[in-house]
Length: 612
Ligand SMILES: Cc1ncc(C[n+]2csc(CCOP(=O)(O)OP(=O)(O)O)c2C)c(N)n1
Image 1 (tube, rainbow, N blue to C red):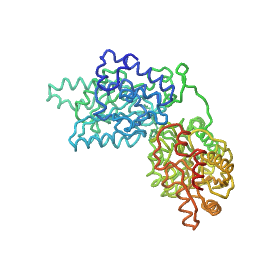
Image 2 (cartoon, helix red, strand yellow; image 1 turned 60 degrees about the vertical axis):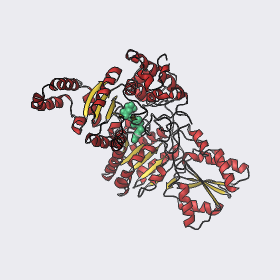
Image 3 (cartoon, rainbow, N blue to C red; image 1 turned 180 degrees about the vertical axis):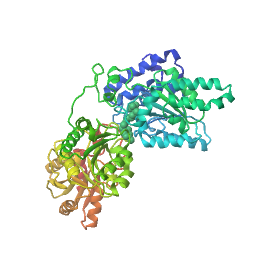
């Protein structure tokens, strides 16, 4: 790490001679592979963006200018070049370096990132602030081709293209989302990538015509014609951007030169950069999808593909099983095919599987259309990303009571990805969608039965929320009842659901050893609340302890309190154990449970406090 060890910021980087840039990039890649293979994290995207990030950091000063990485999973090199290299051994661990941009961590991170497609909008907001406040700094949004499939990105591009704000959008096009990019935008970019002739033509044309303005006007139409034949839809130019590209994203000096040019234009510019995901580490170049996000692995061997059993794989198998019973069942994903376990389904029912791209809003509205015309769609989506489609849930699904099923994966604590990815809010927002039923399976068997019920027996909107990872000791199937008393007691009612049932049962056992008789009421259905069983238990014990991995507003505990009050059940004591405002930092799930007292120990402690 001869060169890398001397680079801690923008000025150090400017001191590295141009001819050493290739060596520097090689050292950065070696550092990334070595460190991420130990901690786990997002590897392939950062590997692909090494030259691009170095060039950005030579052209722009990240402490003064604003470099916005869309999603932010590709920002590891940015972190390395802004004084955080020595913290990489703590990446994604509790109190360690975050895996995504985090302003609290460094002034070089201008904005929280984690969800795709918002960077151009944020850049436009900053550009307007800069103009109105008469300030002087540059703004760059770096967005991947996968994230560009999201509608929000096009809202930002439309605004930017129609404005006079000098901003630079760097399209980091590697042809990949987590898996291969899909849809019309990706076809358009593929065509643009393979026809680099236009940019050469345009550069030469401009150079010559600068001296011949009369001829320029006369030949403008001809130029447009040539443009249209070389660059299929010319969409960015037509939207008002100066389109520059495609540029080789692994030629650092070319990138630097292009970015300087883009900055000098002082108008909305889109620089189309072509990169290879996983570049420089053989196994990641061959299977970039496997190296998008990795657990710790041996770099000499590479990531091992293991068919592990977890809630996602269980969902994929169940969806395929149920699809065999009813040919109107279809499965939908927004760029998360393997993460949600739907690769199993897609291999068996390719015609009834829809991978739409990074498009949660479209996915929900599209499912509503399918349901309206007699299909039974299940949209498998991570809890955190479903947030984006709230309006479609209310307007397109809820108001017509359409039979759309949501398989809400990664509900609750997700761990290392941190605040932008925790599934803390789904119970709160799903609970307000008209007609929505929410089930919370706590075992694979419950997930399987509840999915069948949701798809084949229900007729309105239904969501199943289940956690990241595997089931615990609880393996029963109580899905026939909305609620079940797993353990009877007289001193207090522990209301729980989903994976935390395991912690609640352990806690009740320990409490009984201390002479406290806790009733464990497990809910299979959390919206609407199973009022009868909740009231019966609270009347009996007179004390409520709700245990859940969600934010407090709209939580089950909050609704239990309201239910008790409305029904004249006076509680001697009550405590809601949850994730508070829902903003939970990164760290291993078990560590986070400990921090929020949502492990058995914490529940015991809280129960003892509660009962005095
Ligand atoms: C709203 C939203 N949906 C889904 C995701 C999950 N996700 C993280 S990265 C990614 C792929 C992004 O592809 P691209 O922007 O091309 O970047 P690349 O990984 O190819 O570098 C996806 C789908 C997300 N972060 N945000």
